[in-house]
Length: 383
Image (tube, rainbow, N blue to C red; front, side, top):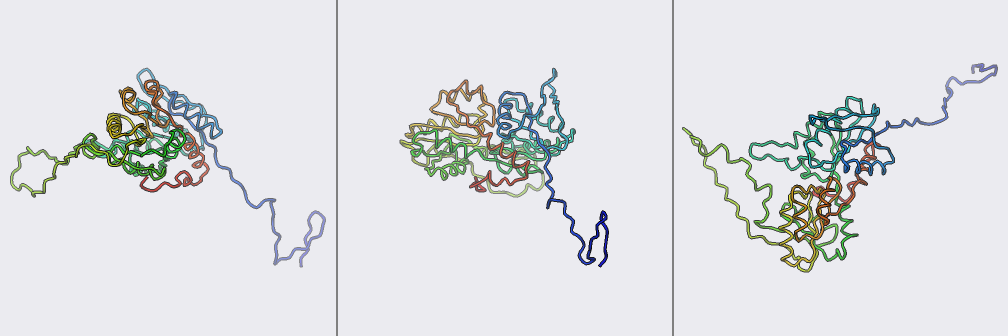
């Protein structure tokens, strides 16, 4: 066995068993890069939502300036380094939708050129989501916007209650479509007295699936309004009769296809018993409120003694606040995904539910690389 000297001391070293090296620890902990949260516009509602989220996360709101120049061009100045960090851009959609879209695009591109590692858009209400189907010779604008966001530099999107879940297929990066229903259900349980005597109402057959989900979770009855008072999107003309019939045709006239029978909707009716009950109408968006007002009148005639309207996104455009204030609706409950402070001043019936908690948790989990399954507990594919 050979003898080696180390610092004047003799040591026996076996050739068949080399010495084991120890560095005092078993593995190295590599910390993840930092992250920042920015607000994509300077509106009071967006900054307020961003501050609620950052307070829950325990971080400061990123320093940036978003403003419109004299010729209405959007300018974004990021006031701090974002190199190698995960950046979350919070953007609520006010009434000026196109300006909000440009703010989001310009900020995403500014952060991309500033060498941000990942750019995640937190867009609680995704704009142009109603334009997700072809109408006549129009375009699928929602698909166009998805391509623009990817080109600007976004790598991930957090949104809430997309108008159609299939919109997620328009993107070539991950989309987390969160749900507001747990917060609205909690509001029903805590703020509506005697909610056990309520019935969940779908204002049209197309909204029955969402209403069924609420009814099953609350263990309540279900009612559906059906009839000619409502004209759903699927009934709109979509150009399938083109080319025009007046076109002169020579030679072969083509095949004679069976004619599609025109639709004749039955008189408006309520499928389900609402007499002496609390009626809770649920939907994802409340914008033009004529359908909701008409549904409330029908429910009142059928014996409902109190009527609530609950939706995730309260766009409440044009004369919606005034119409709701004058209607048979007793209370309108929406979340803070869309700014609606002005509408609340015009209509005291409007109440707001805060969803910043789930947005903050989604940000934390994405940055830490944790599973998002916790945020989708008990949510089925068709919910």
